[in-house]
Image (cartoon, rainbow, N blue to C red; front, side, top):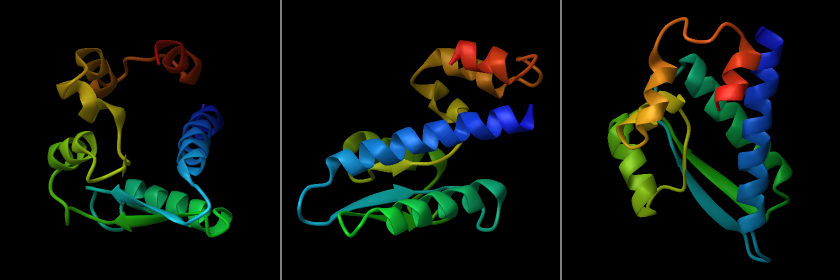
Length: 123
Protein backbone atom coordinates (compact mmCIF):
# COMPACT_ATOMS: atom_id res chain seq x y z
CA UNK A 1 0.00 0.00 0.00
CA UNK A 2 2.85 2.37 0.81
CA UNK A 3 4.26 2.11 -2.70
CA UNK A 4 0.84 2.78 -4.24
CA UNK A 5 0.41 5.88 -2.08
CA UNK A 6 3.92 7.00 -2.97
CA UNK A 7 3.11 6.52 -6.66
CA UNK A 8 -0.16 8.42 -6.27
CA UNK A 9 1.54 11.37 -4.58
CA UNK A 10 4.33 11.24 -7.16
CA UNK A 11 1.74 11.47 -9.93
CA UNK A 12 0.06 14.41 -8.21
CA UNK A 13 3.43 16.11 -7.75
CA UNK A 14 4.36 15.47 -11.37
CA UNK A 15 1.04 16.90 -12.55
CA UNK A 16 1.56 20.02 -10.45
CA UNK A 17 5.14 20.36 -11.70
CA UNK A 18 4.07 19.96 -15.33
CA UNK A 19 1.27 22.48 -14.84
CA UNK A 20 3.68 24.90 -13.24
CA UNK A 21 6.20 24.39 -16.04
CA UNK A 22 3.49 24.97 -18.63
CA UNK A 23 3.11 28.46 -17.17
CA UNK A 24 6.73 29.24 -17.85
CA UNK A 25 7.61 31.43 -20.81
CA UNK A 26 10.99 32.48 -22.18
CA UNK A 27 11.73 34.50 -19.05
CA UNK A 28 12.00 32.76 -15.73
CA UNK A 29 8.72 32.46 -13.87
CA UNK A 30 8.90 32.47 -10.09
CA UNK A 31 6.05 30.87 -8.18
CA UNK A 32 5.45 31.30 -4.47
CA UNK A 33 4.84 28.00 -2.69
CA UNK A 34 3.30 28.50 0.73
CA UNK A 35 3.72 25.89 3.40
CA UNK A 36 2.12 25.79 6.81
CA UNK A 37 3.54 22.65 8.40
CA UNK A 38 6.11 22.48 11.15
CA UNK A 39 9.62 22.92 9.81
CA UNK A 40 11.26 19.50 9.60
CA UNK A 41 7.95 17.59 9.52
CA UNK A 42 7.28 14.93 6.86
CA UNK A 43 5.09 17.32 4.83
CA UNK A 44 7.68 20.09 5.08
CA UNK A 45 10.37 17.68 3.83
CA UNK A 46 8.07 16.57 0.99
CA UNK A 47 7.52 20.21 -0.03
CA UNK A 48 11.27 20.89 0.09
CA UNK A 49 11.91 17.84 -2.12
CA UNK A 50 9.24 18.98 -4.60
CA UNK A 51 10.74 22.49 -4.69
CA UNK A 52 14.23 21.13 -5.27
CA UNK A 53 12.99 18.81 -8.03
CA UNK A 54 11.21 21.60 -9.92
CA UNK A 55 14.06 24.08 -9.44
CA UNK A 56 16.63 21.50 -10.61
CA UNK A 57 14.61 20.50 -13.68
CA UNK A 58 13.13 23.90 -14.49
CA UNK A 59 16.07 24.84 -16.73
CA UNK A 60 15.92 28.45 -15.51
CA UNK A 61 12.41 28.76 -16.93
CA UNK A 62 10.66 28.25 -13.63
CA UNK A 63 11.66 28.73 -10.04
CA UNK A 64 9.71 27.90 -6.92
CA UNK A 65 10.17 30.04 -3.85
CA UNK A 66 9.08 27.78 -0.96
CA UNK A 67 8.16 29.65 2.20
CA UNK A 68 8.30 27.19 5.08
CA UNK A 69 6.30 26.97 8.26
CA UNK A 70 3.59 29.46 9.08
CA UNK A 71 5.50 32.50 7.84
CA UNK A 72 2.58 33.35 5.55
CA UNK A 73 -0.08 32.35 8.09
CA UNK A 74 -2.12 29.32 9.06
CA UNK A 75 -3.29 26.63 6.63
CA UNK A 76 -6.57 28.43 5.96
CA UNK A 77 -4.82 31.77 5.46
CA UNK A 78 -2.34 30.33 2.95
CA UNK A 79 -5.16 28.61 1.02
CA UNK A 80 -7.04 31.93 0.91
CA UNK A 81 -3.86 33.66 -0.34
CA UNK A 82 -3.63 31.01 -3.06
CA UNK A 83 -7.25 31.64 -4.02
CA UNK A 84 -6.49 35.38 -4.24
CA UNK A 85 -3.37 34.79 -6.35
CA UNK A 86 -0.63 36.04 -4.02
CA UNK A 87 0.51 32.44 -3.46
CA UNK A 88 0.53 30.13 -6.48
CA UNK A 89 1.06 26.73 -4.81
CA UNK A 90 0.01 25.30 -1.46
CA UNK A 91 1.30 21.94 -0.31
CA UNK A 92 -0.51 20.03 2.41
CA UNK A 93 -3.19 17.41 2.92
CA UNK A 94 -6.39 17.67 0.87
CA UNK A 95 -8.74 17.72 3.84
CA UNK A 96 -7.84 21.39 4.50
CA UNK A 97 -9.86 22.18 1.37
CA UNK A 98 -12.99 20.76 3.04
CA UNK A 99 -13.80 24.28 4.18
CA UNK A 100 -14.60 25.04 0.53
CA UNK A 101 -15.33 21.56 -0.89
CA UNK A 102 -17.38 19.70 1.73
CA UNK A 103 -16.79 16.30 0.09
CA UNK A 104 -13.09 16.55 0.98
CA UNK A 105 -13.91 16.28 4.70
CA UNK A 106 -14.04 12.50 4.26
CA UNK A 107 -10.27 12.58 3.75
CA UNK A 108 -9.81 13.60 7.40
CA UNK A 109 -11.72 10.63 8.75
CA UNK A 110 -9.55 7.81 10.04
CA UNK A 111 -9.75 4.43 8.32
CA UNK A 112 -12.20 5.64 5.66
CA UNK A 113 -10.47 3.90 2.78
CA UNK A 114 -9.58 0.22 2.79
CA UNK A 115 -6.51 0.74 0.55
CA UNK A 116 -4.83 3.12 -1.88
CA UNK A 117 -6.95 1.95 -4.82
CA UNK A 118 -10.13 2.70 -2.87
CA UNK A 119 -8.86 6.22 -2.15
CA UNK A 120 -7.84 6.76 -5.81
CA UNK A 121 -11.36 5.85 -6.93
CA UNK A 122 -12.78 8.47 -4.58
CA UNK A 123 -10.38 11.18 -5.70
